[in-house]
Length: 188
Image (cartoon, rainbow, N blue to C red):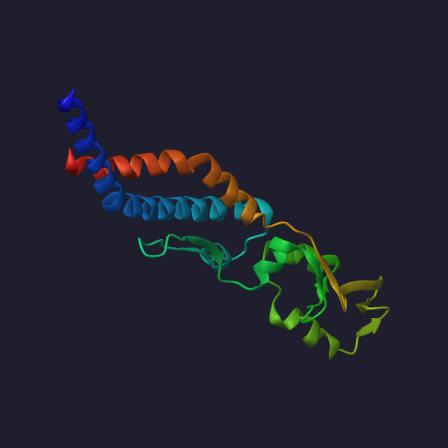
C-alpha cells in the first residue's frame, strides 16, 4: 500500500512540474497557431466578400503572437475602414462619392482613374450637380456619374469576429492537445 501512495505522490508532483513548466508555453503556442489559422482563413474569404482589386487589403489582416507572459493573441486588420465593414452602421464623416452608371461598372473591376474622379469631373463644363448626384451631359441625354451622399449606410459584411470565433471553438482543443504533447515529449 505504501508503494502505491508513493507512486501517486510522485505522479502528482510530476504533473505539477509539467503544469508550471509546459502549460503556459503550450497555451501561448496554441493561441498563436490558432491566430495564424484565423488570419489565413479571413484572408482566404475576403475575395468572396469584397471586390479585391489590390492585395494590400488582404495583406492588412494580421495577428499578434501570444507569449507565456501575455496569453492573448489577436487577429486584426490594420486598415481602419475595415472596422466599418465589420460593425456596419451609418458613416457621416469622410463619405466619398459613390460611382454610378458606367463608373460603377468600372469600379467593380479596378480603381477609377484620377482623371475620372468626382473632384476632377466637377471642373468640367459638361458636368453638373443636382439632387445629390453628379451628372454628365452626353449627346444621347444625361449620364449619372456619382452619388454625392452626405451619409452612407454600411452593411456588416466583413464577419471576421464570427469567423475567428467559430474556428477557435472548433480547433482550440485539438491544437492545444497537440502542442502540449509536443512540449512534454522531452520529459518522458
